[in-house]
Image (cartoon, rainbow, N blue to C red; front, top):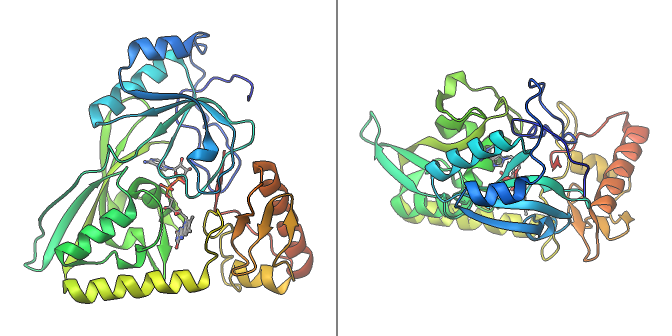
Length: 333
Ligand SMILES: Cc1cc2nc3c(=O)[nH]c(=O)nc-3n(C[C@H](O)[C@H](O)[C@H](O)COP(=O)(O)OP(=O)(O)OC[C@H]3O[C@@H](n4cnc5c(N)ncnc54)[C@H](O)[C@@H]3O)c2cc1C
């Protein structure tokens, strides 16, 4: 287990970096018997000492002391208030499809927004062919895409096959085929560490490549502006994109999608790794995929440390060969 630490806001949600704490004011000490107190003060669902390997698509990672699974905004709000009161570190996750958790695990609370936090609603947009869709952060992106197709709404087809949650996809500004989440998005509802909900319109949000600046806030819901489209044509398009993924990406081996960000103005990370001759490179049970060099895959027995060591080895070799330091896209906890 990691040593006990004190913080009062969500651990920094990455930027592909190792976990850091935001520069918050020090607060009261973490209450030593916080697990008992959490159980007494919060009535929602909690899993104790749950291996993160179960919750992350890389299938590695040690136990989280607690995984709290709120089923409503009220439960989420009360959870964050209780965690602040107890001085416990927390981190929100969606589907764990862009996350590498250390073998030591996480000595705090993982707040998981999942299927219970996944409503989808719609209302008419300003123009006749426009619809505004409001989605809670725990909704899977695939469920949203399928719902949009069934409703004949276009704008999110590019996300077909991205295995994350809507919250994770917004925070990551997930993208594919030249499109990204920020394009169709109109606003995001956040929960601050201090407990209030705030809505930010798109113009107030700082999106960049695979990143949204959340200022440590938690994404609760997002709204998208979509256009009327033909249900059948949308279905065919999504089916095609899914087949393209199957062809280009490793199948049947645990992974987290593209491991590294594409460096600006240079060949894609996958091309650099391939041209450095690193396809198939292996550390323990972690391997550079033979199918797509920007995918690091779990051959079955990998540990988080194997992935970290392989990541560093790939970074070193690409730097040596091309003078480019690859930045991980995957968030490391
Ligand atoms: C097979 C495969 C294919 C993929 N293809 C793509 C692709 O084409 N394009 C692409 O962009 N990505 C892709 N990914 C990566 C991943 O699916 C996306 O980044 C996805 O958006 C992550 O969502 P998640 O819910 O799994 O987030 P997690 O992995 O659970 O979390 C990622 C980060 O977001 C933070 N976070 C999650 N939810 C919230 C929230 N509600 N509020 C605040 N912070 C939050 C977490 O703390 C963490 O720092 C792929 C992954 C896999 C396994």
